[in-house]
Length: 206
Image 1 (cartoon, rainbow, N blue to C red):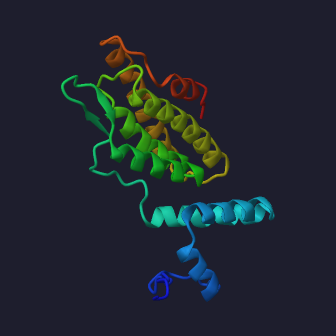
Image 2 (tube, helix red, strand yellow):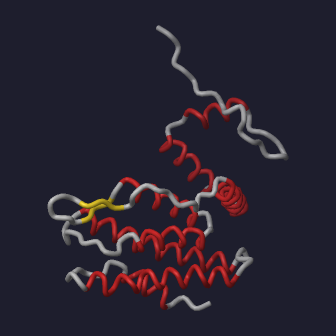
C-alpha cells in the first residue's frame, strides 16, 4: 500500500527575519487538522506569558493587513427564495463574517466595522421569515458588530489608530447604515434586528 501523502511546507512562504520554523514543526502545522491546530494554539497562548499573546496578535495583524482581509467580495451575502421573495443567508455571508471576526479578534476593529457596515447595508430592501435562518444570521451580525465596536475601543486605547478622522468616518457610516434599516424594516412590519449594535454605538464616545 502506498505511503500517505504528506503536505510539505510551502517553499515560497516568507520566513521571519529572526529565524525559521523547524522542518518537523512546519510539517506538523501543514498537516494537522484545523480544529487540532486551534486547540494547540489556544493551549499555548493560555499557558504562557501575556507577552506571547501580544506577539501572536501583532503578527496576526501584520498578516491580515498583508493579505488585505478587509477587501470586499463580489459574492452575494443574501439570496431570495421563490415564490415568497423572502431572503435567507448566502454562502458569501459566512465568508464576510469570518473575515470580520478575524479582524476584530486580532485587534483591527475599525477594519472589521467597514466589512460589517457593508453587511448591514445588504439587508436593506429585504424581508425575511421571523422564524427562519435569516433571523439567526441577523442575530449573529448584531453580536459581531458589538464585538467589533469593543475591539475598536481597545484599538484606540492602544494607540493603533493613526487617522482619527478616518475612524470617525467608519463609525459614522456604520451609524448611518444601522439607522437606515429602522424605517426599512418597520415598513414591512418586521422587527429591527440590530438593537444591541445601536446601543453599543450610542454608548461609544470618542
